[in-house]
View 1 (cartoon, rainbow, N blue to C red):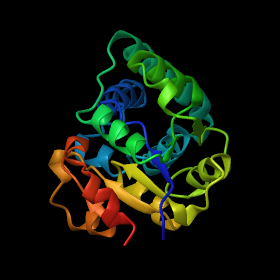
View 2: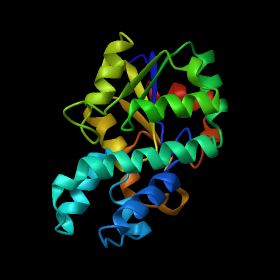
View 3: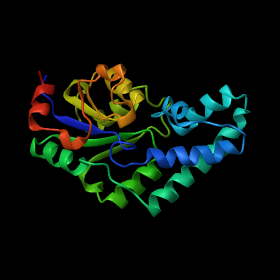
View 4: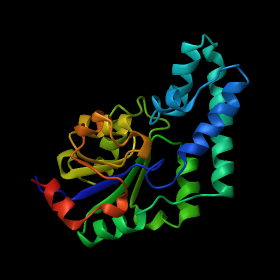
Length: 220
């Protein structure tokens, strides 16, 4: 199938925001005496904040009525930290320029709220590269459900099978494959050797490793 469209994830792929989310989550969860180490946290990367909280509040028997306030607090903390320091991931500009040269349409589909998406793109100066930005914030389902990818493709006037996604999380990978899209995954270095990433069409250590040949091979 001829590919026409690239859809980027944001957190952990475009910006190094996962440590910010982790720090914000730990700060808020500590108020409920919930101790969440990095390994446990990693199992829920890619979920929307409300689903992340529902998962762990249920697990630790915390009243789920606390979720809306906790969700707002976590998001506010992350936005504040992004305003202070927003680190673009290695190879992002390289990948965007390579994809632009292929004349692909480029969109962004993230589990993060639109307020954070706008903040990140403003801080990184990347806003103009993405003709469509979609958030799963108010969708019925977030990743690993494919809806945010499907809505991004529709807004770009592309068929799902014409799209490939660039992701860093396993939940994002599942969402991309469920949408019938190709997927390039860039896992966190600590998770790179895990066999679950074999579900992707291409696994890279960094977006800096992306080549024109990789993009051609995706169409095979």
